[in-house]
Length: 413
Ligand code: ZN
Image (spheres, rainbow, N blue to C red):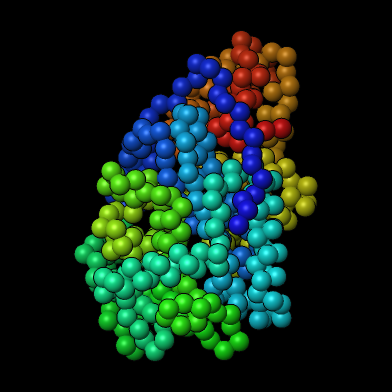
């Protein structure tokens, strides 16, 4: 699938250095140094295109956008892969409910999503891969799992045996009982008759009546979600033989830690004998009115709606950066209003002939970003600079400052 249009990211002004980068690894629960490399392999789980992009999605993709900006500013190459689950139960259910063709629904929602990403100036993935186009890769992965006796059939559906893997649960650190509960809540079927282990996950679903299917050596059907991401990540990120982990970062929203990322990790370990990622990075959930934003609660705030109401996408970026990426947090009209005002003042400050000192402020911004993307501190440093500039302080370089905000924060006017 063609990624959305490239975002122009200027190179940092010479002399500005990016120090070591620390990120919280969900597997260890600690902030860890990201080793310095010339090439980073990053996989971020994409959307299932059946409903519009809400601010929770935007916050997740913005998080990885900031990481990629930092890495590129260090002159590292980033191979960034994102999938799009363009065939799955929720998509088929929604298409049936609305009486539309599932392909048309997916197409229209992908187009809304990519529009939002372009408006928010989110860097596109290097490879943007749909589940349908990845079916041959999925079939190959299932065959390789099967060759290791890690797959079995229940009727004509195929399941992956998580119990064949020694460290299952090593990412989420949940108890067996917690995993079973969450698995059940999040689309799994732990009590299905015929399962070897309640937590075994579906890798190939045989074609159901009235649903699409693709031919495979195991019969006509469609891929399971977890194996889709595993197969795409291992193919498009081309893991290096000489490294103990296959990729550098697997990322997504924190609701993907279990079961999705735990399953992908387990499948990758069985397929290759290696740990999937050096670092598992997860963004918190965005809520509204005290509850998590979700389709089922009907409390979604859509990026496209805000933009159509005339909200500057830069104010949305600013608002999402005003809290830490890992925190579950609330969206509010007040937050948006404050961010719109802050962005207007920043724009005005950047137009001043004389601006407050910038080199120390830029160092503070970079230090905060490198420390597990401490964007609340970044926003507070930028706001102070704006205050001082509008109070008449001088000694800085507005052009260098504007360029740095563009390069590292994706804020451009
Ligand atoms: Zn995924």
